[in-house]
Amino acid sequence: MPVPVQMTAMEISAPGAPEVLRPVTRAVPLPTQGEVLIRVVYAGVNRPDALQRAGSYNPPAGASDLPGLECSGYIAALGPGVSEWAVGDPVCALLPGGGYAEYAVCPAAHVIRVPKWLDLKTAGCLPETCFTVWSNVVMRGGLKAGERFLVHGGSSGIGTTAIQIARALGARVFATAGSAEKCAAIEALGATAINYRLGDFVKVLQAEGGADLILDMVGGSYVARNIKALADDGRLVFIAFLEGAKAEINFAQVMMRRLTVTGSTLRPQSDAAKAAIARQLRDHVWPMLESGRLRVIHDSEFPLTEAARAHARMESSAHIGKIVLRVG
Ligand SMILES: NC(=O)c1ccc[n+]([C@@H]2O[C@H](COP(=O)([O-])OP(=O)(O)OC[C@H]3O[C@@H](n4cnc5c(N)ncnc54)[C@H](OP(=O)(O)O)[C@@H]3O)[C@@H](O)[C@H]2O)c1
Image (cartoon, rainbow, N blue to C red; front, side):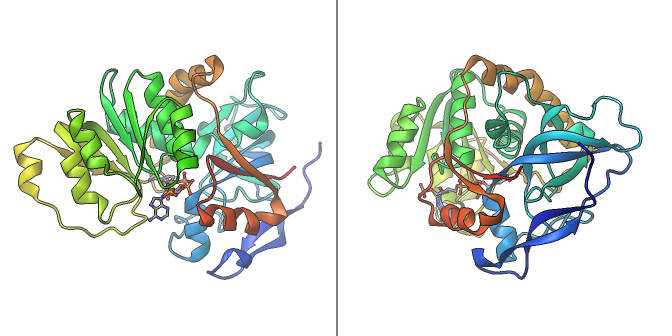
């Protein structure tokens, strides 16, 4: 299929509410050295997209100003120096931005093949959550079989993925969520659900001997409570601060109980760091998908031009699992 000169994309017309997402016609981007051009079929929606739209998460230098951190589709063109891909290959990719469009460019090393057993809709929901979960839970957090793992926001795209990957690794998994329906979805994935409106995750984990690893996206009042919920030598990994990034903690606890407090964000990391995570996903996470130990929990699908509705659903927090845009 020849690559057109122009494409439809969803642009952030000004920082603000979901309605600031507007369809526009843009030039199809050209892949530069080491990059590929992807004809996008599905684009996953992630909470960082909503933060970018609201004006509180700017794209890194050199990245597209269009939202969209992941997509699936077909290789449409190769930049100079790319030999490992061919036009027409079905792929999914971690993007620095620009996924809410008919075509997107990204480094060839951030692309993962979509095998025959994986559909493009599912594949379009994988990169952002799998890169984030694997790099923070396994590469940074060092989760091992038999350990107790707690993830907050257990019904989120990140949470549902973290629960399943941790289970596949042989961990005992606990997850928090804010409703009975979300807790039922978490239990169906094999985790012990804690409804944070009814119960206290600190008490639940302490009764079990403490968490060896906590993946937190809430911050705020959860920071000190996470410290209390950790076992000796426990690790606390932050990936977001939905409730705020400032908190008071007793660092004597960190010292006396040999705790590790760390965290990361994916987007500003180097191309080489992202390529290293992509290789680990191919080797360790794709087999989990093939065997059915990991699946995407699909919440809802919207056409690209209705991205505002997708963002409104995400910000309602009514969703369970992944929201995706149908592009091509
Ligand atoms: N560090 C990184 O590289 C990285 C990469 C991707 C995503 N993230 C972050 O990871 C988090 C999950 O991402 P996602 O795309 O999976 O988002 P998502 O599906 O919207 O998940 C967010 C969930 O957090 C829960 N939550 C708890 N406290 C909250 C609060 N104060 N405000 C809003 N929600 C709250 C909500 O569930 P309840 O109703 O149960 O509260 C909500 O479903 C986001 O914060 C995102 O920014 C970080």
